[in-house]
Amino acid sequence: MDYAIDVPPLNTLAVAGRDERFPVNRVFCVGRNYAAHAREMGKDPDREPPFFFMKPANAVIDATRVPTVPYPPKTANYHHEIELVVAIAEGGRDIAVADALAHVYGYAVGLDMTRRDLQLEARDKGRPWEFGKSFAGSAPIGALRRAADGFHPASGAITLTVNGQARQASDISKLIWSVSECIATLSEYEALEPGDLIMTGTPEGVNAVLPGDVMQGAIDGLGEIRVTVIA
Ligand code: MN
Image (cartoon, rainbow, N blue to C red; front, side, top):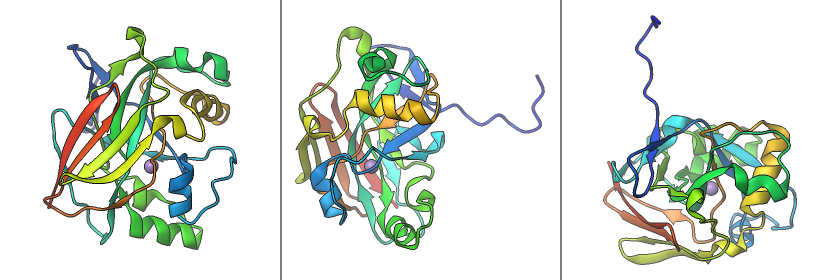
């Protein structure tokens, strides 16, 4: 087929211990999915239905190949959010909670990098979050660990250090909405497709980084990512 312009590159993620790569389709992100983070954002962590926002596929950086994230323009408050990432292998609509994990390809450690000043200004004015959340390079993600190997994390430490100092530390058992519940709810609004990612939300302790800072994020069973912020 002839294309009118060069075809944009496919964004892919590494799979731990394998040569195959995971092609990224869409990136859905869950907002305020840990109570202590909802409180630090000035919101009530009541168990309202989960809400979602999106990032473009070119937000995704394979942190195992590119261990850097560029400091983006138009912000003076660039925040880290360490998150459990779920990769979807099998799509579907109206997926039942009990069936949800059968749709998962695997899991990884990821960062939902956020221009917090732009996000909060948009939030407070009732505007979309895109310029705060949805920009190229805003989602460094580590290697996927496959669900086919029998791995479905439901508890375990999730941590982030910056320059070796503790910033975020929680446990994924504190997710207000579990991985299964996020998949089920999302699939009521939009049919999930193979290649979709779900970033499941961040625990408390979000804070700013500057060029030169080294972020190290980890989740029990999923290893670690190490990403340096560059100018
Ligand atoms: Mn987030």
